[in-house]
Length: 466
Image 1: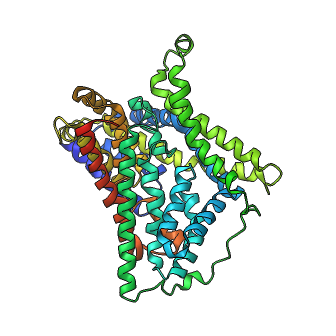
Image 2: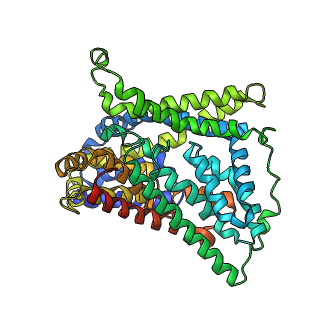
Image 3: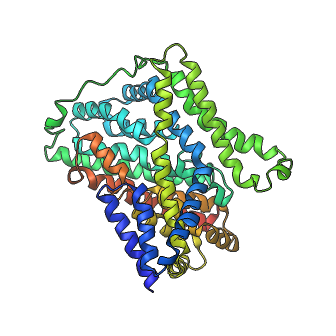
């Protein structure tokens, strides 16, 4: 019992201190050490740190470093080439300020589904959103929720093929790929997108009925006009969209066309530890990101202001997100090694006897909420419970693909609690605070995604994975 209480105390402190802005890189090992000490295992503290914490951290880095690196590089190149700006401006011209909210959501959705980092998207779209909302006389306080709906929800966790790291994390645990349960993913994505749009449009209508317009925002007066993205904002639309199509298309080609027909028996002698069925999903995503990056670079040769600087900035940008998540995985491994975790594990696994999807969803979204990170919570949960869920699913006749989709979508539920770093960064970009905008962010990034998870679980239970 003391060990279980120690785990709860460390989790609560992790959540509180993360909300106060303390970096997870420091919090994860400290809170893991606290849990060990409170559990009465002080004599094992250093061995647990070097063998359990660091082993889990390094294994995570080993598996996912290429995805984080290539994804961050791709996002930076899309921004610096002017491709992201070109796509956003095209959508704006087509929909116009009369559909300001839908325009912002669609622009963010297209970019993030194509693999552009949500932080890059937020920086790129905010100036456009601000002008659109001002022209449409829609309250500025709805901008963060609109960006969040397009960036943090359906394109991150639901739509099949999305290259978001959240969609890649379950692959080695369940032997799946990023297109897992495509039909259910599309349905879940529509629930999130349409539900979120309905909510934001209803808030805008109520604001208009009260006579509330864009509002007076003195902080906007000092804004510097948007830069011309290295002079490349007029990049042809086809070239701007091509890298996004390649991320999805090349991934699908290898996932469904090339790898299933490839005999990997020749690998067993030299790499006996590799199980191709569990790793080809990651290989396909790596190849797709490499191809998209190369095409983006080559298509703009001679037009880059400083290609080396863009590449360096993108590569350097992957390290903090990777090691933040890897540290949380290390924390989860330490927690799972404590005797008190058995009580927590058994409680979670037995939440819904006969239907591991419900138990899995609760575990994923709870840990995502505690860590303030969908990728962090997902990684911790799979590190500690992934094999249990896979075994339970096999016994219940549930496909790993459905398990994959529910896990990813559930991790995108409570991850945006107030202490979430992405939420704090988004509000900072928009020059707004939690009191002004968080309520609407919570509805579109937590309420509707959790409803979507419930819909997917219900359909998956009734009809299986499709």
